Length: 360
Image 1: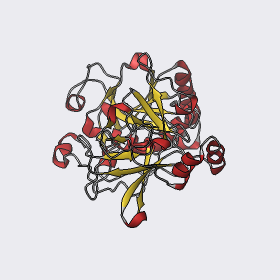
Image 2 (image 1 turned 135 degrees about the horizontal axis):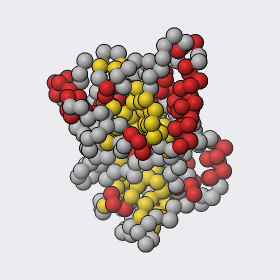
Image 3 (image 1 turned 135 degrees about the vertical axis):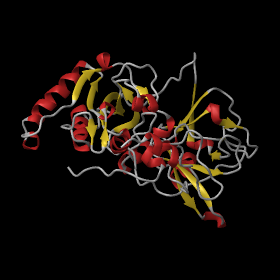
Image 4 (image 1 turned 45 degrees about the vertical axis):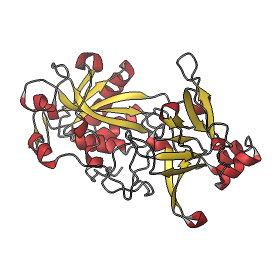
């Protein structure tokens, strides 16, 4: 079964929000008619910009709160609001980033800051969509959308639908909720609390990349999963070329992960749960060498781990009567990874579906 013709009949899903609010232009694609205030069914452990956004414990929040002034604590911890035109960041025009004053998570960047005339720092999109959480606020006799830091839950302000293009959003934030880090000599001097995690990459081909990508995105510790092509001869191949020409590429998913949360060996184990590694040049109804089972290792350590894993799996009861045919090669031999066209990325999430993770 070939997906090429089916894609054109399905078209692209539009990310629509209830009411006038729309997500920022760089937001992760969402199912249709989704509200900012609706809780995600998937709660990622990391943002796509490689920050650990797992909620802090109350003990850690209490420890961090000791550094706050009484006014900062009133705003961040008790949902207070500073008087208009009184914050020290309202008129700040310097180049840099704005991080959560409590936990240090980057929330906004100077390139999205604008003068709204309201008396509070205003931005038209967040640093990373996953760094902001939205909650319905019915206090003061009105209905608003409150914005909070995803990692520590501290109050930042509210978001409104009267902002500039391209998002038409206005993130109205208290200066006391933010700490500004100025760019110096072209770089941001990130403090420890505001740095992304150190990531590694893994490359897996297991049939149609829609399902492989979708499942890996649900694995705790996986920061991003990107559908693409690898292992062939053609530079910058298109989906049509991979399907109908002899490019040699496999449909591969690049997995960006935090090795402190999920190990490469654990990803290998998940991969073997996501597909059948004994099917040669196919996966279920999808037939062709582009659907082959493949592992392309970024390092010698990963290459050795993949070979050892397959050797051990071949000795298990699951594969006692079936030969594992997974191709294993280094990325040096396999060649570069080429991201697939945008309509392939987050395919299931865009179309409101999902492939559940298999039972352990």
